[in-house]
Image 1 (cartoon, rainbow, N blue to C red):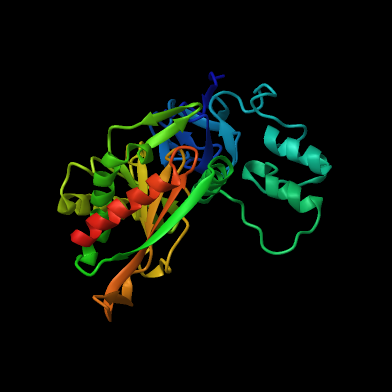
Image 2: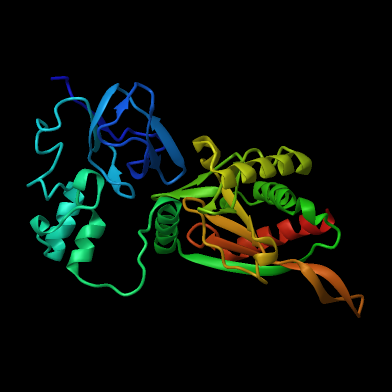
Length: 346
């Protein structure tokens, strides 16, 4: 009998304590070689493909796709005798009731007898959907919250729960700007203004405000999988043209799902613009652990008063949401006006 290798969810760095099984790249009974693709793990930053650390037969897959488990959880057993695994590694009560500990717990909470179910998972394993389906009828189509959408939901809920947020709004005249360079121009203007208002380029860690001396700004990008925020480095020290090339590259990678984990980490402030879909203005949610986020509403021809006459101008609304624990309202307004002043002069 070969020795079984229990593969545990590894520590993926950046202080992460858990991960979601996004997709298994193997099946039970499959022969794999060392370093063959094994599983995709979704963290709160990105999706990481993990290779197999051992060669052999995939004996048991212990965690279903879509489940979130802590670092150190045994995910899969490679090699060994599938019938000789200890109960902790392969939880099962009978051939009809092969389940993970999480599904067993859900069944207990819902009062579902596992022995009465026929599993629809790999090799007849009972899934969470099997248990919930037995618990009673439900209205409407249900779809598990998983992947990027789960991460977004958790992130937004935490920001809403922890951050006492206030949004400041003012109009900006974009008539003198090349709107094709809107996002990099906003990045540049924000980075320059952040030097004057360091409390907006900061983090709140327990009872300390950490003022950051780098200007690595996140850019919100909408993808088919949800919203991701890649990071544009050194926005204060680079030209608008250089920043524009980086924004385009990161946006393409985000939509293709090929961003590297380091390209999603370490932002100090975030900028968002939804273009024609933006609406007049937004009240964006702070990208925790940052303390502020700036958004640009839809820009269009609107009437304004210039020298006592009504004229048409390219007007858009700038919204700044900030953490009121760290940033005072007056300082936030001064920062917003400093950004607008730079944009109107470009």
